[in-house]
Length: 304
Image: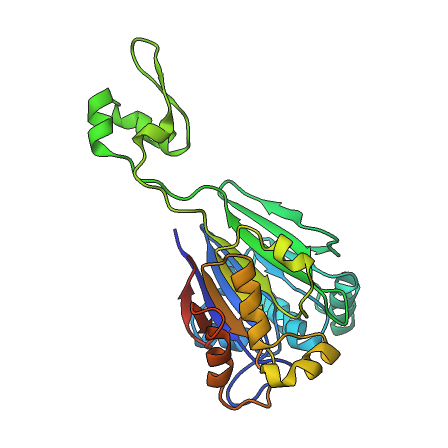
């Protein structure tokens, strides 16, 4: 299974220097998710060959245009492409009326099932639960209601120790049940814990998407257990006052969030259009958290 994210848009309010508003295409444990949908998202999806038909869920953090203006065109394109697969959208209060009103005024109702769920998380809240993946929302601190999202691998894929399998005479058809965590019972009725057969297991991958937020103490609690963190880094720390005024973070503050939450990897984006080169933002973050990477459009980034 794939665990990686394609950066479709990495800029903040204005498109600039070839960068686009926020959007990410996430492949996580057999699922295909879209995180935010700024203007031009479907064009970026075509450009980088991210298949829209495979999308099952769209997650919109808040109702600032650079995070959701692209949803209307995307939904209409799915109509024109004769989509039949169901689509679920999660977003803040008001998004349902906005989408339905635009569709009504355009005279183009959707020809495929589309469920729109309005959320305003007050704490870490479960949104979607599948066999191997759970999705949560949590509150961010911005100028309008804003949710972050967490994508958690329930159980990492495990490799079985061949020597142990042979030692206990485990039949091949029982090996999948061991991978699922079911204990093995031998012919004498003795129960052998499934973990005995495992090679060293990796930690479950947990990806957090923090779109627009200023720092606040509770954030670190919400990010507990996150292994890869995407965190906005709109400004350099010299513009800290401007960041606070607009409800955003600096690159240094993003790095501090990664450090304090014990993340393994930090991806920063949502760069202000005042920066032609985002290199100084990455450099500033790396001074606090060395495993920092820029959200570069068109790049697939592995989740750890």
